[in-house]
Amino acid sequence: MNTSLTPERINALADMAWAWTLAFLPRLGIAVIILVIGITISRWAGRAISNVAARTHQVDVTATPVLGSLVRYGILILTIVWALGQLGIQTTSLLAVLGAAGLAIGLALQGTLSNISAGIMLLWLRPFRAGDYIEVGPAVPALAGTVREIGLFGTHLETFDGLFVFAPNSTIWNQPLRNHTRASGRLLSFNVTVPADADVKRVRDVLVDLTTRDSGVLRDPPPNVFVESYGPGGIVLTVRAWVAQRGFADLQRTLLEEARRVLDAEEGMVPKEIVRTVPAAADPSRLTGASRARPRVVTAR
Image 1: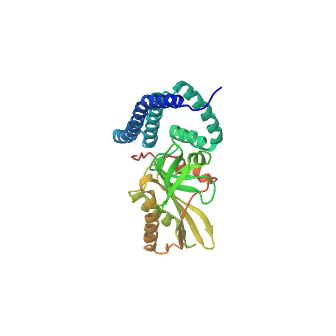
Image 2: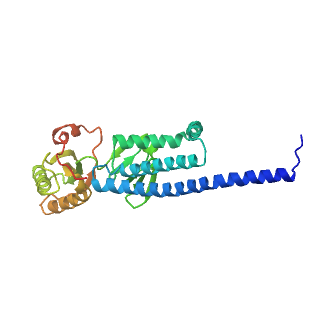
Image 3: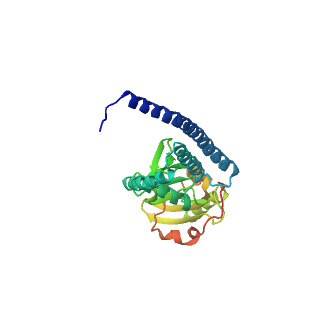
């Protein structure tokens, strides 16, 4: 068989290449135009969906970024399939190949896919929302910060000192989580140590009056003051009061200052120590009296 390149064969190949180029270039140009338009529309649609969802207040603010991302990636996928169809590629066969490749990639990227599934579960169950202050994990120090955004792969947090933290969704989903702003109220507790010869009843009345007249303390359940212990160093009284979630951070500081001021003004009641405390989980007083009642304040979100 003669395979030498004769002038006639070269001319035939050149004519074939020219004919293929004339047929393919318009398709290539249309595919490029489709890609450019599709990418532009996907970005615009993603931003538009996020803005509309944020303005209507009918969609949870936590899900707004994810909705924008889903719309954007969905349009991009359709755009790519359409552009490949313009190039003459059979999209049916391509989808089958992509499915097989996706399975292989999924097995290789199990960690990334676990973040996506964890993000979906976080959006579905909503243990926290954007703006909540959360603490994740039993480790010390635990991962803590204000939630700024929940994405498909990770959650954006901002620490109390202004640091940006990117936490993979699977890390948050697989760890114990404490939401500091989910409930409508918080229990504020502190111990006051007074001299051993102080009038306990009078000290209790002064502290009850202080917490009752403070506008930040809830009336239901009422504040509770009781003797924690008697000792050679003095008498320790515990003050517990439910406060609104929004004012908890400021009130836990100012209330201790006010307690010191009013006790200093009373003869024989000058406190030796005032310490803010957090009742232990095994403290039985949490299940008795006012500690059992739940505040009935609903804060705006």
